[in-house]
Length: 156
Image 1: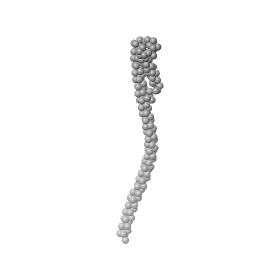
Image 2: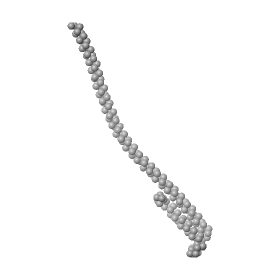
Image 3: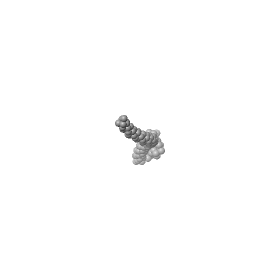
Image 4: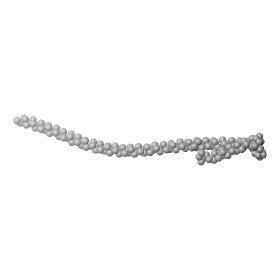
């Protein structure tokens, strides 16, 4: 009912109201010769074809006005649905933008952590290489010391 009284329906409401008035007037003209207190109206003596023609045109105008108002109401409902969908779409876009920003922040943190892990990984590889060289050198040193002991035992 809220959609009936808007600017788009104003001409149809006015034409429907005038058609209802015309229909009532044609009814009064049709009944006037048979009702005593309507004698002044009966004095106008409109012909029955004019009365019936006015009634038919009034009914047609009322029907067309009702169809136009119904169609405008349907259009208004569709527009309201589209507006709600656009509003929902804008909310989803905002959420998408927010999540995209969160992901960018997380990507920044992840890239920073990846850079740190690569840095630590290279440092650990360097330390491991140093330890491996130390162990290899210490094994060579141990073998040398062992060899020297054997030689020194043989000398004595």
